[in-house]
Length: 108
Image (tube, rainbow, N blue to C red; front, top):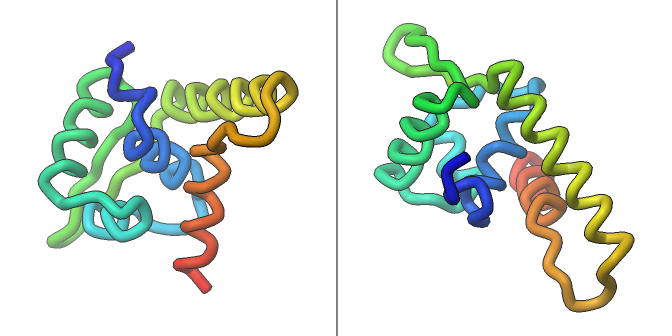
């Protein structure tokens, strides 16, 4: 897997895409993850090239969805997060949780 998966913005993007209650496209993902549009397009292209996402053109927008492989990866990342929370305490930053919390706050 590319090293991009362990950076904060790609992790937030994948976790955001796991929320099926929303329709995701590049500009919405940018807002949810505080990422610039060019950087988001680069990440999405990389994710698509390794089979983590698929895109579909609907009118003027391109809808982004996780593939089965992408969903499986997000689940593994969430499991890794749980394991690391058991082993580390205090100062360790919880990137996945932060991404979910920020998305929920922006939806409110």
